[in-house]
Length: 200
Ligand code: MN3
Image (cartoon, rainbow, N blue to C red; front, side, top):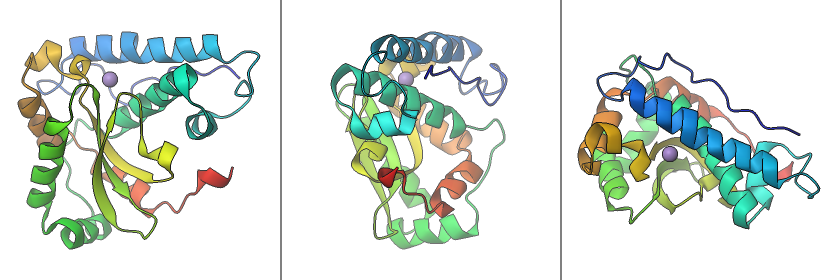
């Protein structure tokens, strides 16, 4: 099965001034595309050839995992971003308040975790198996899906995510994204989804 680079869910300049068209041209058009192309080059003739992307992320390791997970992570990340400033809906708000105290406290903890991630990686809000919310960070391509947890939202903290617009200032990038661009409707959908692809 050939995997495709999905189109961005917004115009390339729609997230300006927080994320430039140039960043998206590289991050989506070159970095994300490269993961998709490498995945397509690696899987023919392997047991992963006819699996869905999610199944590959769940079952693979090594180079196939790295490229499959980065393909999935980036698609998920684009869906986490919105040109329209939003707030979390009632159900997700309540869960955030229960787990973190308030939205502001969540944003602060999430940003701290994202900024503290050493090297390349991702910060995630996840739903754990007991239905609670937690913040976690992963290195390189790793993600919650591989570990059986449901991703609610993410922020890419690889340097390629922010170097064009923010240079070395990861804290300012994370704060700006989390305060202005989060697609809370998408996060809420993920929170409400009772999906278990692990059994697929
Ligand atoms: Mn990236």
